Image (cartoon, rainbow, N blue to C red):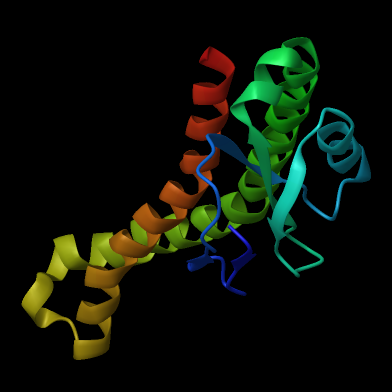
Length: 158
């Protein structure tokens, strides 16, 4: 792998001698130098990185032979990676929970009682749209809060 597109969705490879490699994707937040140095010091080679200063993602590459030699040092990298994932989960929770509370309180205190009292067909088109779309927005926000936590607990269990 030689390059990643700006959005991180396309990977570019060049043909080379066959070798088994392991890739690791690390979320470094705002360019966490400690995580970067931990990877570098344990023999990982930086394959690609995003250019964003707010959410830095780095893809690291290492041959399988080197991984077996440095097993203890890789444990430190795994702990740093887990800590970075936990920070990301906390960040998403702190940012998105107020939005979820606002949408939920608006839906459950004003929209839903009006629908239950007057019926769905008595609402205007805009109100019907809001009553239909709000639950999907709330589920989307809840999904964005829970996914980093599920990833964190999956890493913690392994």
